[in-house]
Amino acid sequence: MVGHVLVLNQNYEPLNVTSWRRAVCLVVVGKAVVVEEDSQYISTPSMMIRMPSVVRLCYLVRRPLPELKLSRKGVLTRDDYTCQYCGARGRDLTIDHVIPRERGGLHTWENLVACCPECNHQKGNRTPQQAGMRLLRQPERPRFIPYLGYSTFCAALRHEQWRDYLEPFAPHLINA
Image 1 (cartoon, helix red, strand yellow):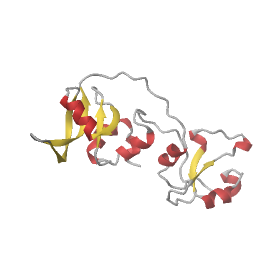
Image 2 (cartoon, rainbow, N blue to C red; image 1 turned 120 degrees about the vertical axis):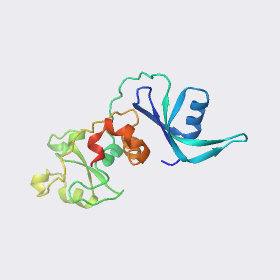
Image 3 (cartoon, rainbow, N blue to C red; image 1 turned 45 degrees about the vertical axis):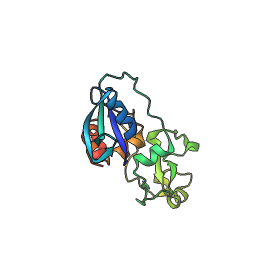
Image 4 (cartoon, helix red, strand yellow; image 1 turned 60 degrees about the horizontal axis):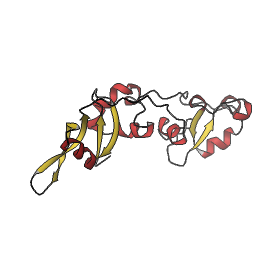
């Protein structure tokens, strides 16, 4: 997330990830204050400015809490791009219904897992027990503040300067 800035609400709740240009504009016009700075500098004709890493808005943005939408990318991110049957990692994973839809399984966070093509073929249209397979981890709906979007939030957690501001909203993801 090089060149990106975490935007916090007035109450330090993560709101958005934006470009450094947009963040600098927010600071210059007085809509935000810099909370954390990066080690890089921005040169202007008249001065040198340290690039912001985290900014906080000077006013409270009231937004309704959005619903966490179920998506392929969300399931793969939740499972850390790891097959939940054999542990293989990669980007060529498929999505598997733990209990097949044909057998009454629902298309929900609790019934979908990341799966490599080999395990998906081996399991087929059976339950893991019928196929003689075990899940590495029971699937569950992610718990976090979804203003950023789940995959953006998980990527933002890897940014060391942002962790202190994101950790209170997803402590279970920090230790995973």
